[in-house]
Image (cartoon, rainbow over all chains, first blue to last red):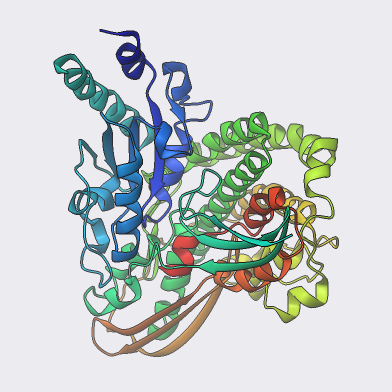
Length: 144
Length: 358
């Protein structure tokens, strides 16, 4: 594999978008970056710009307003890209699925590669999801 | 210089949550700030018509993940008032323990994010490292790190045994020592002071007139804290609201820093007052009537209006959260700021958008 492809797998850059979550999964995603879990030791860096990101971590449910933003962010990311839906809300709508302004999980709007269950998902589960997703990304890169 | 409009959000590295501000700038100076909300709206107040009053506890906990325990405490307190239930003393004290642990982790989380907003990343990491110890306390005593789900109508569902109480006290000694070791950096470090002192000043009168809540109000010199209402077990606990008078970002962060230490003290007091009474009373009947109940969240005053009509479904749940109260003061202090100070000032109100929009 080329240098670029190897580094995409060895050091994925991650972007987090809160898509109508209750904050529970967001703070757990942030906790992954802090000393106790520290994903940076695996080369995973949190970035703020979707154009720099390989992995999109989305938390929360989709509503008509943030669906547009989510599509926008997803389309700005370079290919190949991974989407991880974190938490019960991101997977299916969770406890909010019957609420009037909720469309459902993230997969209603953009394709999702890895689902992380839990309300909220624990940092260990989120890290495991990123590793699982990278396996998939490796497959795509090797095939291309 | 012509006016330029700079969009800030909804996706922005400094914002953990989506909020959009249209910042009208002249040169580097902000002249006007127009907030746009609605990215996190789920409409969960209306779920009250689809979930019964016991299931609603799980819904209101997820209004906001950071202060979930305090949301459900407020809701249960309202239902208990409606159904005229007397909560046992042990349950009231345990509610204080978990609500103050929540306040502690919320303030540490906020102090970290605040440090990150002006680029002090190592302080962010240090504070979150301390916070993980508090998360361990939550996880070991209730089974979940963030959404602890301990409240039920009539009491609490989890208990603490002697060994756990001892362990909590020991861990809090470590946590307190770690927080105190960061005190001089947070309060007196020259780089921190240059970014926070005199930035985003809200006067005492303006804070009161604009209806600010929580640390925003207390940072401007108004001694108002809903814990003075003596809900849950606060009637037996010595408590004084923490007040700073400067009204700037530094004052707001100092209020939260001192409150984090105060929370440790309140947890200790509550643990010492645990008695042998039951955990919950038996609930009979259905909620009927109207009630307004208030608690102090980490971000300020939270108000619940509940209306029951003798059915198992509530007729109306109305939630008013502290961030909603703090947005008008924020819009008032943003004009005139340097553009680079906007993230610091926006974070200084401790915005919780998922609370605000529900």
